[in-house]
Image (tube, rainbow, N blue to C red):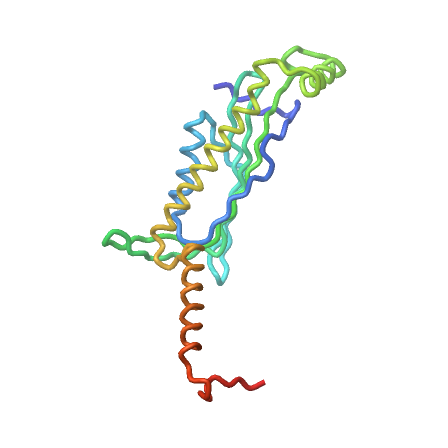
Length: 214
């Protein structure tokens, strides 16, 4: 694979700030493995841009920025920028399938941008004005058939990555004994309202407990 890593050229933003948010139990190692596996399945070279770790009273905070890329030719590459924030992370022991397992618990926020990057200047050894006209025509007038496929490829790769992350996070919901799905919360609230209505209905009218001081 040719590593382009262009310092100049045309950048086209295909996916802008795709967000994934989650709160609950998870495994840090499994999360990063899922991200790496999804990217490698699509032919990306992994690249870490920045990482930070801080410790607070409420837990550990992690920040990681990844810049994986896939070179399509010597003059074109796909770049995915992934920003991962893990906040208030603590250890949590959960019972699962008759055994206890150690997880992390906290808040996850992931933001994803995806770019198509092309370097026409070096491809045709163009003068600046000629390169500008080629980039303009390709973007606004006519896109060559090979290059026209780039945004679709990138969008599909990003969807694969997001699907892998969301699938993993959804699997933790089934393991978290303290989590109630939204529909379960609504059902429980409905049951409590019915119970309260029945209690009031069966309560004697002269019951002093039915009086409310204002």
